Image 1 (cartoon, one colour):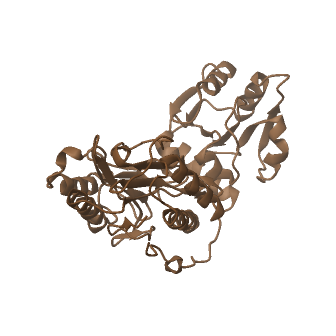
Image 2 (cartoon, rainbow, N blue to C red; image 1 turned 60 degrees about the vertical axis):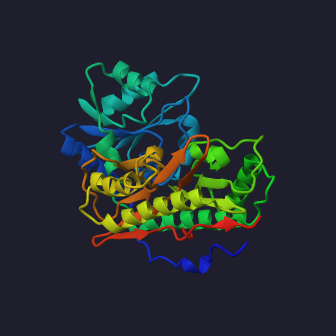
Image 3 (tube, rainbow, N blue to C red; image 1 turned 45 degrees about the horizontal axis):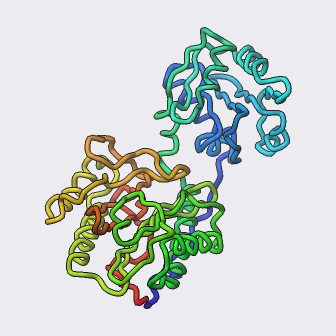
Length: 385
């Protein structure tokens, strides 16, 4: 098999100036002010990690960071996390609680200290029992869903964010190169998946961005297939790998589809169509273009082909601390993308009981166009295995 990827394509990034904790929290205070609420609350998850630069588990113990529009922030912290919380460098009031005593009093004390009447929360992340604890402590507290505005702070990536994404992507591409060199006819999808996962960690991943999709033959026609232990790859199969490393809190998400031994005329035609759609995405993307316009152009290439009945997905989604985050690149989303947005460009065609092809790149929107953060080759590849 020829070498598919040259890591020398990856260049070092610029010197990064990191914001202080106070700088980051002030941005959330600004969200509260813009929404006209007294404060916003973060719970463990991507926004929380972005704010404090430390990852905390989301489990049965409530953990809350409240940032007022005006005044000092406060936190509700499980007692067993206090020593870890010290590493954050947080200077606001901290209300801790122990399992033996329960968290009810801590919520009451937190809200009494803050003296707020309204609160914006992460509607897609905050769990119901935390919401109930807030209302139990202060029944007249007005709680609104501020998910879009809170997560919106992650939409435009900083230079530091982009360097983290590049690191995650570079690890992923090296892992893919290692994996494809080991593929042999007769291996199961599960065996290939195991090689890929091991390669990710060997290349420096802190974690997987998500559980990989490794699918061959008719499995490649299922966009979110699971690797099978009872399917051995054979000559002529499409082999689709969708995966990513996580590094410095950021996730890569890339897909490549290769063919084993040989590619039929149909396979080559389908692959060429998907590649043209992928390239069209880069052609039309620049700051100010809407998600709708990008998806319309990309899907338009697929619709104009003989394989239009194989379209099953939109063009892509935002990428950062979450694998799927705003903006969603789909028709009907008329949000204009600002420079600094990162999204996946992943057109695909899938025929059930036959095969599927997806090509996915991670794209940085710039003022004048689009930059691919992924560098792995996209031309049709047939593995001699």
